[in-house]
Amino acid sequence: MDKRHIAILGSTGSIGTQALDVVAQHPDLFEVELLTANNNSRLLIEQARRFKPNAVVICNEEKYVEVSEALDPLYIKVFTGIESVCDIVAGSGVDMVLTAMVGFSGLKPTVAAIRAGKAIALANKETLVAAGELIMSLSRECKAPIIPVDSEHSAIFQCLQGENADIEKLLLTGSGGPFRDFSQEEMSSVTREMALNHPRWKMGPKVTIDSASLMNKGLEVIEARWLFGVRPQDIEVVIHPQSIIHSMVQFTDGSVIAQMSNPDMRVPIQYALTYPRRTTLNNSRLDFPTLAQLTFEKPDTRKFPCLKLAYEALSCGGNATCILNGANEVAVKAFLEGRIRFTSIPSLIEETLAEGTFIKKPALEDIFSTDFEAKRIAAEKLRKFLI
Image (tube, rainbow, N blue to C red; front, side, top):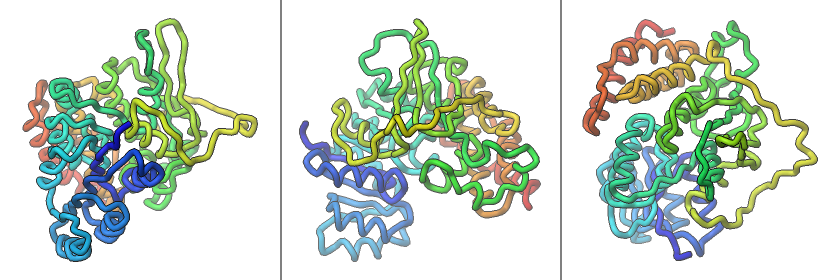
């Protein structure tokens, strides 16, 4: 396999740092062309000094001078702003783009990379949540393959390799988060610190809160619908607290194929970066005799209404999932800032969904305007939920 020249968008986040660990294990397979960060200039400088990319982008313009002066002796080009990210990922020096930026902000550079025909290792789930039908259509049109990085979607992708059979059902597993055993009453006293204490995965704050509310699982349902072309009713969420089985595919003959490993995001990251090849990874292996049990249960959508809201938005179609995503970003930010209760997150999303302008067949520009409107409506409604 020739060296892949990769751009890592969001290199200072959880996925980005683990991707660079994969790159460090395989210097013969990868060349880092671009690293980007929003605010974490210190870590971006550290990464650039180690991996020596052709360019870096610090999206926060206030940090540009700091990064530029630090990397000038290494002759690494330094840019600022999201437009710079879009320009560089579309350039001839990049083969594959790992999109690990958090939230809706990842959509624009992902579209730029797809239009340039680049292979996409997709870790930014909001891209497909906000504009799934448009993105998958653009991917086919531009012959830009999208390879999932989320552990659940990577598991399904791996289970489907070499299969020509019809899919009967996708089974998306989830740990259930830190509040799986909480009562309805206990949910109202959840704090920021409690919600950020995920039992299985180490992730950034936004994704960790989404996991605690099960919105993350709802976003994954929406993403799976577009990645694998299945109907919403053929995607089932299964709570699996041990996080050993990362997802499953059930075929029309009743057979179920699962992908298993210890919880380690480097596994799906590396699979996406090396696909269709599978290569070695220095990580812990499953020791089956020591696995006490693998358990499964249905999610409680009464206690975790965000999952139900995601299914409802997906069933509505059009731009409804984009409204859902925009409202969720506002709600999660407010909760992390201590402004609203954890149980107010789904309430704010539901009210925003009810008021947002529905567009049955949105164009790409409609998606951007929908995100803006949803965040405006959510910000206005936020006042009634303030603590």
